[in-house]
Amino acid sequence: MNLLPSGICFYLSVAICWLTSRVDGSWWYMGTLGSQVMCDNIPGLINKQRQLCRQHPKVMQAIGAGIKDWIGECQHQFQNHRWNCNTMARDHNLFGRLLLRSSREAAFVYAISSAGVVHTLTRACSQGELQSCSCDPTKKGSSRDAKGTFDWGGCSDHVEHAMRFSQSFIDAKERKERDARALMNLHNNRAGRKAVKRFMSLECKCHGVSGSCSVRTCWLALADFRRTGDHLRRRYNGAVQVAMNQYGTGFTTAQRHFKRPSKNDLVYFEDSPDYCIRDQESGSVGTGGRVCNRTSRAVDSCEVMCCGRGYDTTRVSRTTKCECKFHWCCAVHCRDCNQEMDVHTCKAQT
Ligand SMILES: *[C@@H]1O[C@H](CO)[C@@H](O)[C@H](O)[C@H]1NC(C)=O
Image (cartoon, rainbow, N blue to C red; front, side):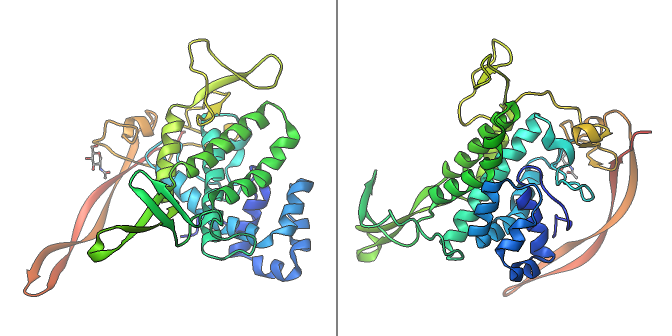
C-alpha cells in the first residue's frame, strides 16, 4: 500500500515529504548525485536543515521511508471520524492547508509526525542501518530494577539519540520563526517525541538453572508504535485550547476555567471546522463518499458522518470463508460463500 503519491511536499518539514517521494520515485537517482545536490534541491529547507540533510543523507532517507507508518497510524486512529487524517494526492502539501491552521487536528499531526520520526530513527539505529548511531552505548554492565540485579545485554533502543536528531531537524524551522504558531508547533512536536519515550520498557531473558531466572539479561525496548498512537489520540481528545500570553513568550489558557497544559498535552489555538464539506481554506475534504454505518450511534453513524446530507446505499457481494469443517488431522476446509451486503456512503454536498 502506497499512501504517498509522488511529487508532494510537506509543510511541516518539507524535506521529509519530498524525500518520501524520492524513496518511491527517483530517490536513488538523486542519491547518486550526492547529498549536496539532493539537499540543495529540496524546497523550503532552512539553512540549518540543509546542513543536517547534507551531513546525514541516510538518516533523511530512513525518515522518508518511515512516513507511511505514522500516516498509517494517524489514519487508523481517526478511521471512523469525519476528519480521517487524509492526505491530499494532488496538493503540493501532504495535508493541504490543514497544517497552516492551528487546530486540534494540526496539533495531532505535528505530534504524531514527530513521534513517528523518533520511532523510525530509533529502529533504524538499532538495526544497524545508520552509521551515525547504534544501540544505546550507555546500557552496559549491570543494573537493577524492582526484581533485583540484571546484566545489560542485547540491544537497547537508543531513543535519546533519535529524539535529539529529530528535535534539531524538525524544530529548526519553528525555532527560526518564533511566532505563536511556531510555539504551538514546538510544543506539540515535543509532546510527540515524549510519547515515544514513555513506552520504552525493560525486556529480559531469564538464565540460570531450569529457567530459575537467577541471572537476567535485559535491554530497553521501544513499544509498538500503536501504543504511541493510542496515547496521542487520548491527548488529542484532551487537547488544551490556549492563547498567547501578553509577552508573546508562552501560553495562557484560552478560558479561565480550562486547565493549564502540561508538556505532554497537545495545545491548539483555533476551533476546528466540522469537516463536513470541502473547504480548501481549512484543509477539509468533506465527507462526501465516505462509508458510514447505518446501525451505529457513534461518530461513524450515517447521521453524524454525513452531516445530515443523507447517504447512498449500494449492494456489494463479498466472498467469505464459510461452512468450515475440521478434518482429522489437521486441516480445515472451507467453502467460498458469496455474501451480499449493503454499503452506505455519504452524499456529497450539492
Ligand atoms: C456498525 O455499528 C454497529 C454498532 O456499533 C456494529 O455492531 C457493527 O459491527 C458496525 N458495522 C460495521 C460494518 O462496521
